[in-house]
Length: 179
Image 1 (cartoon, rainbow, N blue to C red):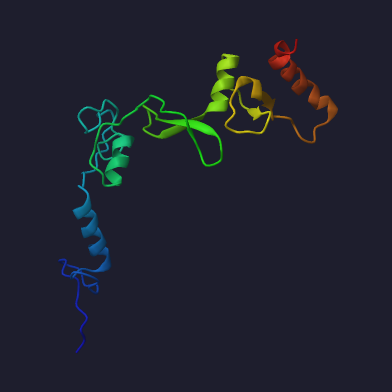
Image 2: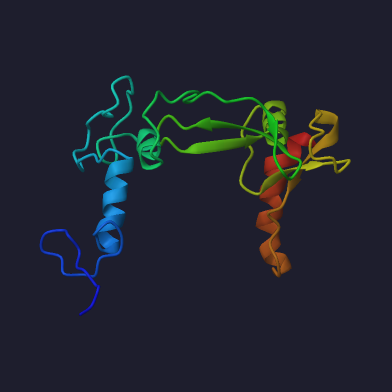
């Protein structure tokens, strides 16, 4: 005679793992007890189920920000700083950046201070292939005098006749910066 018992869930004949349930039903039971289960809603155009939130429902009747809170098992709360940038803080690599929650997607975004300073100086966003270099190598020294704009979009292994149109586009883009 064996001491193996079956799962106590109706219709399941798997071996019991814990509390009389098989591994699958035990894990499912833990999920249900630890966070409220929301019914899936796939209707487009509905607003988030969290009352004060004006954003569109994307998953399970919630916006992405509130869905992330629900998945983490925390009580739903108003998303603070939604759309507004937070304070400048240093990251682990020495750069200074700030965070915000994108009001459209609910995803977190960061912005580096050295790029922000250069964009303000140029009065435009940085273009593809442009980077900001710290002259003295100190990543948190974001004074304008310590920053310079670098273009990193040079073509590799090109014939000279193919480089002429590329060079003309560089002159057109940056010619006004040269005195």
